[in-house]
Length: 63
Image (cartoon, rainbow, N blue to C red; front, side, top):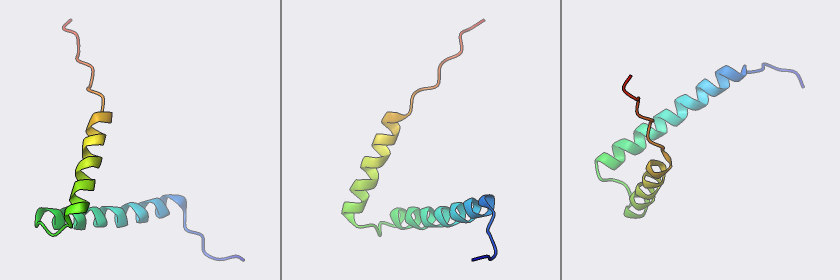
């Protein structure tokens, strides 16, 4: 079973491109108010959880 093999970097780039387009579509639908209210609630919950997981950057001490 030999055939053309897609290099890993190309596969990742293609997947990233598809994901970015899907996110852009979702964001456009969200901005236009076309998302189902249940989906909007899920997105808000996920965003809230992501913000809670982010740790604040350490402040630089004045030298």
